[in-house]
Length: 81
Image 1 (tube, rainbow, N blue to C red):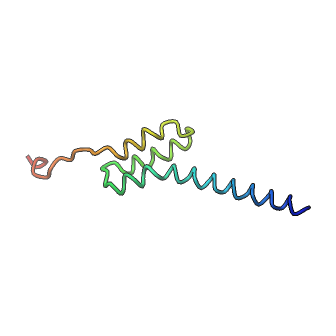
Image 2 (cartoon, rainbow, N blue to C red):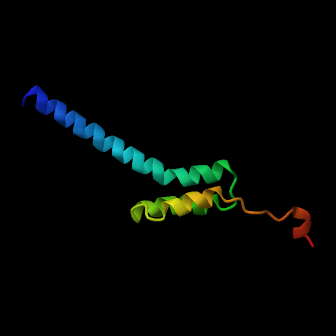
Image 3 (cartoon, rainbow, N blue to C red):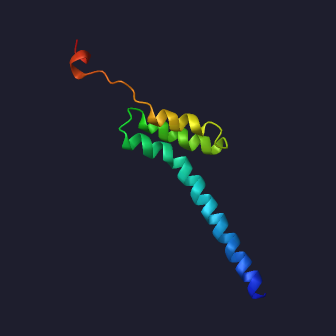
């Protein structure tokens, strides 16, 4: 094996690993955003991010928008009425 072949294999491994890392990061991103913003359905947003990984990121923009949507919370005083 020549030095060029070894270099080609190293480049291939680095590209494959970095592609996998980016895909996993994009699947985790909506859940991280929702938890940081104290979203009431942060776990559901996180699951949605991972499900979009299985669907080829088709609905990923919707899950990211969902992570940013502010849901109005009912104050505690109104819950007890």
